[in-house]
Length: 238
Image (cartoon, rainbow, N blue to C red; front, side, top):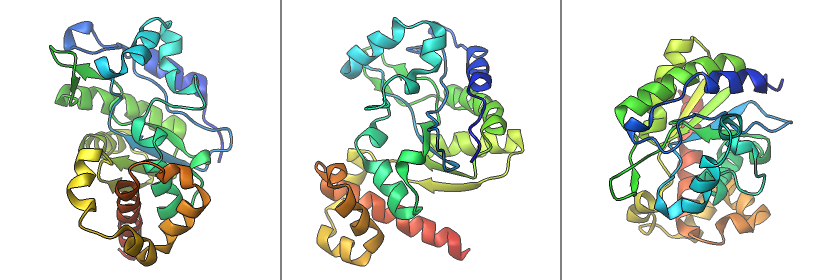
């Protein structure tokens, strides 16, 4: 897969700052992390949490120049700053469901800005941020030309659907639930983790290779990966 013009992506994001009046924590959107051996898959979670719980990361972002803020996902190869990716949930799902290597996968969030409440808690992205993000993605998608986009969560789904329509780009779109602890814990405990691994050998294979990905919140991550495998199998049969 040809690596996209990163500088073109940067210019797009630099052209779309939002005012602080929208309770936007950092005014500039950001480009996706794209590895040098990109496999053509783009995974989008919902939005960064830039509330008081991630104050150190937020302060570092605010101290960066705009050009650096736009490249924020390219600053640290150990941790991207996208929680469901960094904790292994989405990596496990990609490797198991798409038979792809997550290390070769591009990653970002559907919503490219973060908001906080009056008490500095994380706020669900507003419809305006979804709309603004869709516009930015509609410009970035033709540069990226992904073969497949995976959206996780309703907000990411809304962004991808709108951006795909606006851009006219053609790619496979796979939608998954958001792998948040609250979402998954309500359901994952209804199943036996061992039974899920027997029924979904694709997931068992990846957990054997990357046990660190499931060292914490094991049940939730296994359940989410099985959800991803099931959804991808469903798309193949359509």
